[in-house]
Length: 262
Image (cartoon, rainbow, N blue to C red; front, side, top):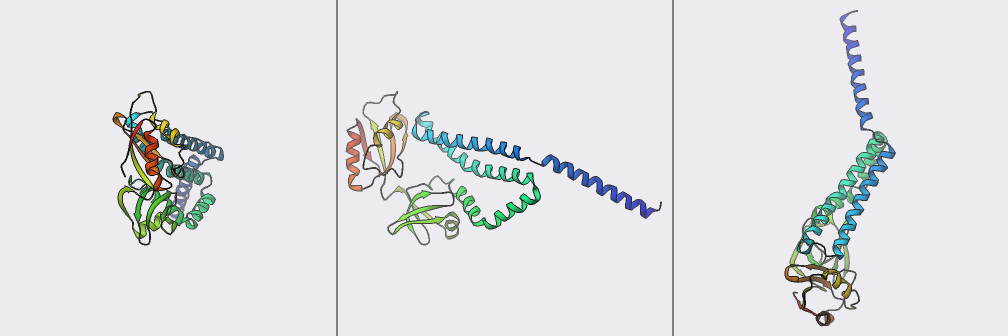
């Protein structure tokens, strides 16, 4: 056998070996549909458990002055965990059938790129603790308050009505949070029980009492945090500012001292 033939055979053998190695690696990386559904079920179970914990921390006072930091940790963790779930499930879906599923994911990313971009920008922007509902915001064309935060954008309430602005548009046009104070119906109250009782869950108790108050706009659930020495901070939305002092008198009638911080 001549030298050329030997080289050809060596190249063929090397090519077959490399192909076999790739196939083995490919087989190890392949997911089945049952594995995909199992992983998906676990991730979604963790996600909904975290959402339940977040909601529970919003209505029950369990950790005293550590309640708010723990709640914020859960919120920030959810901001990261949700896109991680999407990435993990997308990777598992790709590994079921890399060619066809890869093409499908590529088409999804191509056609839904603006929404994906909005989603990613929104995740980043919501890590800013000042970027909250009730905060006054100014963009290139609008000035108002943040009325609602969605996954793809925010609703800004102005004198002309409610406007939806995507996160990508906010990044493109730039925006300014005008102050740290709440405006347009949002008020901060300082509430202190006249006869503090360590057995009481004051956050849950006040939520129950406020639930029957007609002056409060329950489209925005009151935010209540209990600090040291039973000093309670409440953020509420009043339907009509003329009833703000009526609300204060009502709270005082529940055996609390109450004053308006804003």
